[in-house]
Length: 290
Ligand SMILES: C[C@](O)(CO)[C@H](O)COP(=O)(O)OP(=O)(O)OC[C@H]1O[C@@H](n2ccc(N)nc2=O)[C@H](O)[C@@H]1O
Ligand SMILES: Nc1ncnc2c1ncn2[C@@H]1O[C@H](COP(=O)(O)OP(=O)(O)OP(=O)(O)O)[C@@H](O)[C@H]1O
Image 1 (cartoon, helix red, strand yellow):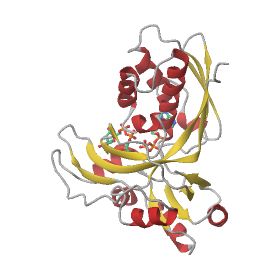
Image 2 (cartoon, rainbow, N blue to C red; image 1 turned 180 degrees about the horizontal axis):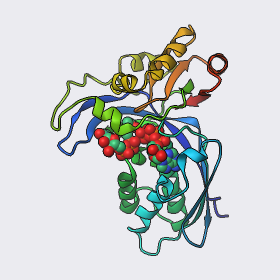
Image 3 (cartoon, rainbow, N blue to C red; image 1 turned 120 degrees about the vertical axis):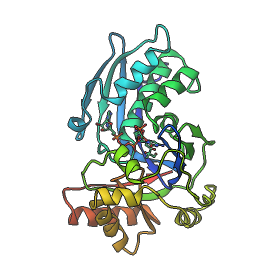
Image 4 (tube, protein in one colour; image 1 turned 90 degrees about the horizontal axis):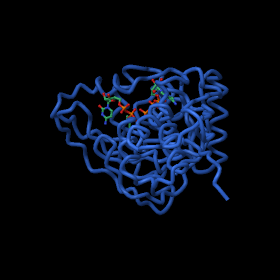
């Protein structure tokens, strides 16, 4: 029985993100504990015919359905590397906010590569697939097999999959796009410049409480520059921190999405409701992360 050609493109959450320096090529060396939310976009592939993309869903107009869409970009990068690659029509249901620090585009690109791999009998470790992922964007390789892991370098060095305890979270995005290059630029590092970085906490925690305690020892170094570019990020963090049930509030990736962590699903749902009441125009999603 063939597997249906459909997959979830989950939101990527940078639970931590330390910037270690800037490389000669201009990219920044990072150390980040990446996890995935249960919420995300959905992608289907109808095999046959030419490569095509149809996009629907609440944030479809912001993502676009042309050659700039990362689904098309990733599929083309793979087709250039695999002779006779079978393709087809992709159908993307876009729900995640765009340019939001939760890797929506990257996860969509990775989902497209997963579906093409399934259709063509390629393994996810196939060199062409790995290369297409890397060239599609720094966050695409970690999204290829969306399991929590440490990500290093500019995103190309991936640690083994980690069995993190499940965390309950609220994701909050003030519906303002924040462009990743601008945030890295605002760090103000020169090519070749190194930063002390600081020890990264152990990611292997046996309970949600131990994991949150470890996360508290770490940071997102992109938070200060992103907050200078978009002050609503600070406002969103403030709203999360006001509720006593919030164990940790932090920004993901280059923002503007921030996340709050809670002891259980009820506390997360309640915090989500409160923030939605206060900011009905914002994107607020209670979800689990692991
Ligand atoms: C901030 C993160 O989301 C953390 O997971 C990623 O590092 C960014 O991943 P991404 O959005 O897929 O990034 P890309 O689209 O490949 O890069 C956008 C731009 O961000 C900057 N960039 C990106 C990644 C990185 N490690 N150093 C950088 O300086 C570069 O100027 C690059 O031109
Ligand atoms: N399928 C897609 N979904 C979202 N954005 C897309 C997509 N394809 C292309 N883009 C473009 O990619 C850019 C980054 O969007 P994305 O939502 O991936 O940002 P992000 O969440 O900040 O990513 P990251 O966390 O990886 O830095 C946007 O400018 C957007 O127009």
